[in-house]
Image (tube, rainbow, N blue to C red; front, side, top):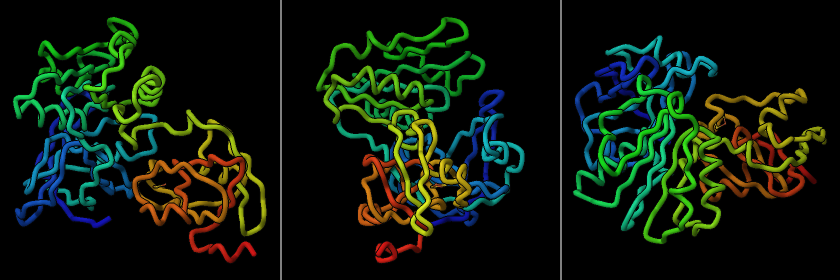
Length: 317
Ligand code: FES
């Protein structure tokens, strides 16, 4: 992933917890192109790598990248560093945009965004509505009006904005009960929302359903498996609620990590045997044959053999 060094040219609080950052080239050059749904990986001043969706629709020669960061008091420090250590003028390492959540052509769209999951959705909806497209519906689910970024942009007749503090849980079923091949569903938000949409669209054609990959909590939907640590043959049980990374660490096997969201590659391990469902945003298809990103990817076979990144298959013999 190529890296840029960009300067924060603007910063503003959109809500008490969500801050907008604009990033530009220090010499004013145009930035690499991107399309709606793309994200960048920012290394915060405290050294965390975090992926943030670009909230503007993009294009061929953007002058800036705009991201929005919700401060997460229970987080691991990435959002706190963005809020506390970054000001206008701060220079940050930023990856070139990556798009694992592309906007595909479709007669109609249903966008489902939960909380800060609105960021890639906003880019897509702005692009489509700027083109004069109809049939673009948005369900935007947040806790309260006071903590809803871009609230005023989603007041049209095709939009439903729901605040759970006022109205309780939102019933998605009426919107998803009837599968429609003319509609693509895009969802980004917290893991329970994404899981609910997955479940409620099980009867849709899979190609119509699009989930923001780095927003998904893959550990919540997977089966337990066993990992064998190749250097010493140790067997590690990975329960459904723990990542491979956390299970290895629990058993005293140190594995470095940074983003813990499948975007930086720090926790990449050699995959020596077994089948894996890959959920990362860093490995190529070829690399996926011999590597696994331990923070997000899981085995689909009962057992996998893994080792440090430089452990080659021949080391098994
Ligand atoms: S820690 Fe970044 S990909 Fe796993």
